[in-house]
Image 1 (cartoon, rainbow, N blue to C red):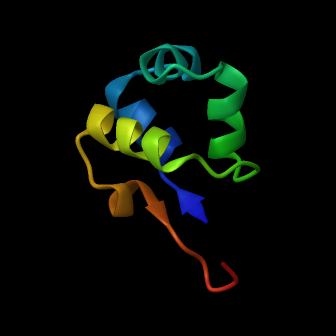
Image 2 (cartoon, rainbow, N blue to C red):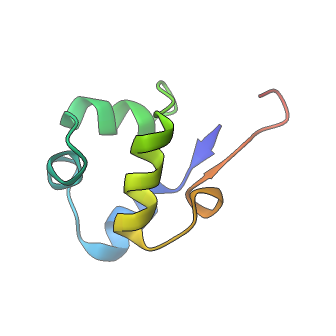
Length: 66
């Protein structure tokens, strides 16, 4: 799975720490998601999509091997 979280954060000038606070997870979790090392829960993905005002499908996309 790929994601555009880093791009969306940059557009809104939000740090990983700020996004972590807004979603109730650690900064390390946000970092791991951005790096593709961790797949977020449905609830977390929905929270991030609301914060960035985009759909979950705009924020996350499946790769061929998923």
